[in-house]
Length: 194
Image 1 (spheres, rainbow, N blue to C red):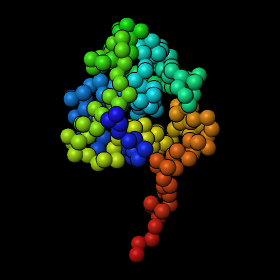
Image 2 (cartoon, one colour):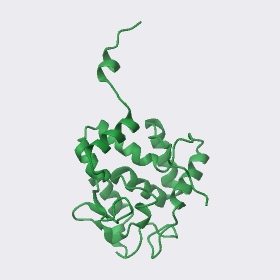
Image 3 (cartoon, rainbow, N blue to C red):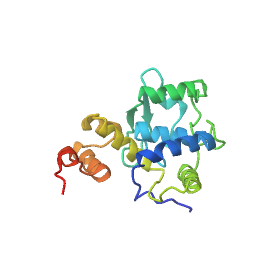
Image 4 (tube, one colour):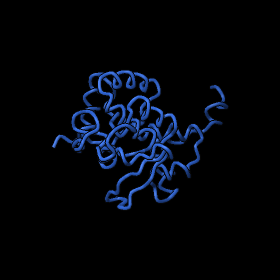
């Protein structure tokens, strides 16, 4: 297959985010929607996002039910931040679509069949290359970027644990250490000049 390796995905740097946003929203609005689910809800593109159906979104309670996968056969529920819920309703009008349709249908819009396993990653890879962005940016980078930004916004790690579907807080702590690293405000602000 034409699999894109996401194992070395890095969070996207702040100054690159608006460049991606403008370009992808214009070139591939469905891909930008998938990025939104990854960034805001911490969903995984290959095993969660592509299987989402309209009926999995509770527009009143602002949650999305994620179908079970090998790692978590019962599935999970993720919170949809209000800013993203507004996008789902006003820009994509998902609440008006057939509840049995997959959000990421094969024709670039909700439909009865879902996209293939590498579809979203390959589309992102193509646009990333067009923008001449670093290879470390993968589709999965958006999940890492959302986590890092949420952590920097002081959203409690316990809440990030639930949103990620991690079984323990230790898993979340390890994930954040790996993706964000250690940042000391004392070193940042008070380090003596040479």
